[in-house]
Structure formats: C-alpha cells, structure tokens
Amino acid sequence: MTRDTPDSRQAHYALALLLLAYILSFVDRNVMAVLIGPIRDEFAISDFQYSLLHGFAFSMFYIVLGLPIARLADRHNRVRIISVGIFLWSLMTCLCGAARSFGTLFMARIGVGVGEAALSPAAFSLLSDLFPKEKLARALAIYSLGITLGGGLAYVLGGAAYAWFAGMGELRLPLFGAVSPWQMTFIAVGAPGLVLTLLLLLLKEPPRRGALPAGPDTGASLAEVGRQMRRHWLAYLGIIGPLSLLAVLGYGTMAWYPEYLIRSFGMARENAGSTFGTLFLVAGSIGTLAAGWCVEPLHRRGYADAPVRLIGLIALLWIVPASLGPLSPSAGLALAAAAPIVFCLNAYYGVGVAALQFITPNPMRAQVSALLLFSTNFFGLALGPTAVAALTDFLFQDEQALNQSLALLPLLVCPAAAVLALASLQAFRAAEAAVTAEAPAS
Image (tube, rainbow, N blue to C red; front, side):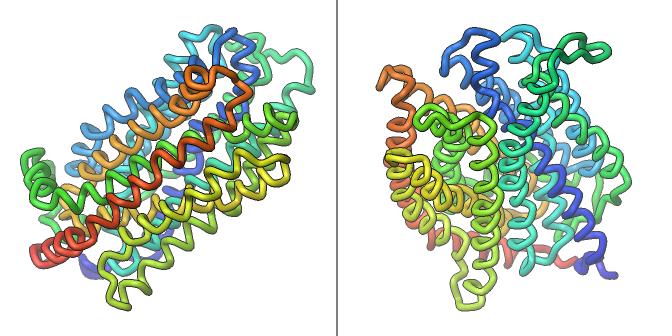
C-alpha cells in the first residue's frame, strides 16, 4: 500500500465512526429544539433568553477553541483529539440533565460546545488523507449526513424520549436525584457518546498524504495560513462567506421551525418534533448526498469550480420555500414546504467543505477548516437562533409572529450568499490549480 493509496477498508471504517460521531454531536446540540417549552417553563425565560442557551452558550467556546484544537490536529494524533472531544461533550450533555438553574444549564451547554470543537477540523483532515481527491467530495458528503441524521434524530428521538419520560411519573436517578422529563432526555441522548469514545480509540491514525512525514513540527504556521488565504482571498471568501450566511438561515430554521408548528397550528410537541425530524432525516439526507454526488460528474465535464457553483445555485433555490413555507395557512402546507427547505439547508455544506480542501495545502487543512467552522458557527450557531428570536421579540413584538421572522430571514441572507459564491468562480479555479501544481511528491 503506497502512501498515496489509502487502505479502502480503513478509510470506510473511519468514515463510519466519524459519521456516527457527527450524528451524535448534532443530536446532543439540537435536542434542545424540542424542549423549548419545558425549559422556558422551568426557568421562566423568554424566547431571547432561551436562544442564548441554544446558540450562544454552545457556540461561544465552540468557535473560539476550534482554531487552537485544529493547530493540534495539524501536528498531532487526530484520532486521540477526536476521542477526547467526544467523551467531553457527551459527559456535558448528560450534565445538562443535572441543571437546576438557567446558569448551570448555560455552563453545561458551554461544555458541550468545548467538546464538539474537537471533531470536525480533525475529521476533515483525516478524511482528506484517507480518500483520494476524486472521492473526497462524496466522502465529505457522507460525513455531512451527520447533520441531517443527527439533526433529524434530535427531533424524532428527543420528542419521543420526552414523551416517554413524561409518562413515567416522578423520575429519580442516583447522583442526580429527582429529574424532570426534559432533564432525563438530555441524559438519554448524551450517554451513547461515552461508548463511541472507546471505538474511536481503536482507530489507527493514517499517514498524512501530500505532506512531509507526520511529526510535531510539520503543520503550517499561522503566518503560512495567513499568506495562503491572502493570496487566494476571493476564493476563500467565496466559500466561507456564503456558508456563513446560509448557516444563519440553517440554524435559525432548525431551532425554531418545530416551535412555529406548535405555536401556529397547535401541534403536540412530540408530533411536531417527530414529523419535522423525519422530514429532516429524509429530505436533508437526499440534499446532502445529491449535492455531493454532483461534484465529480461536473468536474469531468470541465467545471473545476463545481462545488462553489453549486453553493450559489442552492442559495438561490432556497429563497422561495424558505420565505413562503412559514406563511402557510395550514400545518400540511407548512410541512410540505419544509421538505425543500431542509433539502437546501443540508445540500450546501458538504460541497463547501470539499471546496475548501481542494484549494488548501495539506499541512494547513485542519486550521483553515477551523476558520470555516469559526465563521459558520459564529454566524449560524451564535446568531441564527438568536436572529429569529430577536426579530420575534423586538421587531414584531409578538411570539405568535414567529412565522414572520422565519419568512423574513431568507430574504436577507440568500441573495448575498449567492452573489458571493458566483463572484468567486474564477478565483476558485486559480486557487485549485495553484494547490495542485505546488503539491509535493509523496
């Protein structure tokens, strides 16, 4: 097996474990979306205060720690870094179930974000060493299924778990004492990650392809990363900019669409969660795979800028269902509109990550990926749920106007995202050609 020919079995085993980790990460971060009512009632908080728990508390350290952890991933054992992260976020998700106040839940959510910061930058770097370039977009699309599968399961399993525990009467656990159904839901979804940690530790760290032999000083410095990004600034802006803007809409939709169904149409909480979650699983997974599978045939037809071209197209297609769906007169129409909304919500991310790998040299891929995650999560996680809540509380000043907030947001972000992506096509082609020409022989 040569250095540039990864072991296919190891590659697919690693992809399966990383996909499972990504699924669990999205279950743990998004399960709060079906627990809005119970948490608001427990602590007597507003939509805006809840949004701080859902987005800001999770993201404040998640986005800040991404870059230093990515620097470690460009230099040290990525499998161990991921394993420590999984253990930490799973433990902190369980501790969300021990929260007795707004403050303690806020701190536990910070811990979830700290652990999850270790996953994706290191995972992107691992996958770029495990799969050849022509198969990388598909591998990253499969990994990105964690967003749809995990996001969907957060609603389905979270709603079902909450309903199950709510029907069990008084609940008491050793060490935790008396727990509410929403607290027990956190514990139930956090526990599986502790087991996954052990499976990840058995995975072998692969050699780094297209780079010097792995060692503590082989990763690129921040100065080198900065020079690379300045040299091809428009290409990077054409990826990071649209993904960040679309993340605002994506995370805002994920956080509030089930609650919109509850408030506007009186759907039961468990039904809203399970129905939206099922749509998220099916339509979201189709969107993720469809976009990822389009990259390779478009490349063969001469579209070297295929990933970025797809991002711009998705942004434009997203506008209509995202702006009209929340204004639907019935729950049936709102759910029908949710299918194309969720399709687009999940289609752009995997191809965007692949595009970033295509224009970035190996020794700095984790760090540049961390910069992408910093931006998308700052705008998406920190601002997405809060943007919807702020429009509801401060612009419309009526919690029943949640649907109007959801309808307004795509009109603000999608056109700008499309313009940024489509304006960078030539710069992307030049950046990809430069990286291909400068790659060292292995």
